[in-house]
Image (cartoon, rainbow, N blue to C red; front, top):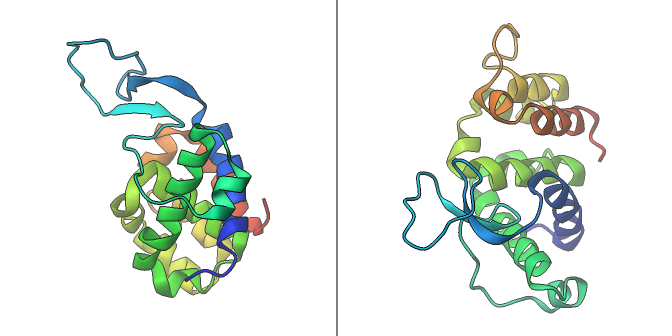
Length: 173
């Protein structure tokens, strides 16, 4: 269990608010178009801050006090779920991460899913070695050592990927 989870939730919520943007309606994440009744959905139904599904967990008192609006509370709850459950697949890696780098991992899991982040094997190897430049390069490139072709994550959202790589490299938000 991560002791400073509330600080990580606050930092991750700030980043995810900015990166995801708010939409007060359900839309198709494939094309960003609002979903109307009876419409064929090609991607995933998504709402609020890019949430493809919603959390039904009990709200910890700290989150309830910090985020009284549902959209922010839902985002904070989702980040808490990532911290409590998804990060457990990275137990040996999170020991090497300061809070800013943990926020990067949370943000990556939020966008790519746990299995998507598990695909960054060399990044995880670099984290274990505490080689932050290498870890950042592995986020940006298919092969961080050769730096010849962008990773699929970078191709999808280059600015976001570059911001997260800088945070990973520097260790500060």
